[in-house]
Amino acid sequence: MLDRLPVEIVERIIAKIPDTDLIAVSKVDRVWWQEVRREAYKRWKNYATMIGDVYCEIRALGKHYIKREIDWITFEDVNDLYKRWINRLTEDQLYIMEKMLRNGMVVDLQERETIEYALSEQRWGGDPWGLGVV
Image (cartoon, rainbow, N blue to C red; front, side):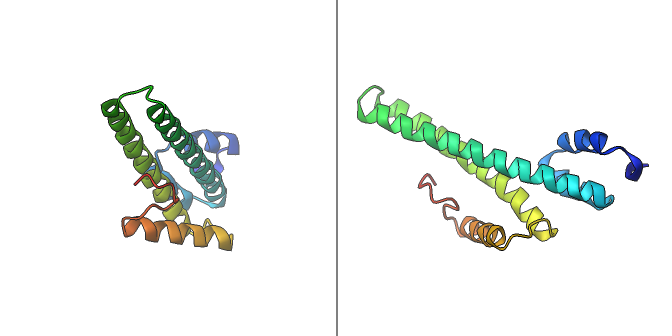
């Protein structure tokens, strides 16, 4: 039955599946594989956007601290929160990227190299995106 659903319904179902189960449903058939791949890329991009937004917030916070608009303890607390948030988003993004790579969903050589580098950096405790917030 799952292999006969209209694509629009498959898209809606896949959009509600959590990251941890997303790749598993790609095994249903070719349509599901394509839709999971599309959704995974979308989530990958969303994580990248969120990481960039949080990074901008960290930089803005630093500027406020330099101008003495906030005190040191507030700066440290908020900065640590932002760093933990970026680390969590990065973990989630790398999880999707790794699953896509392992399941043949990444065909571009440069994307493959980016994923492999980022995963290697993360495994060795580095900063996969070079943001300097680890």
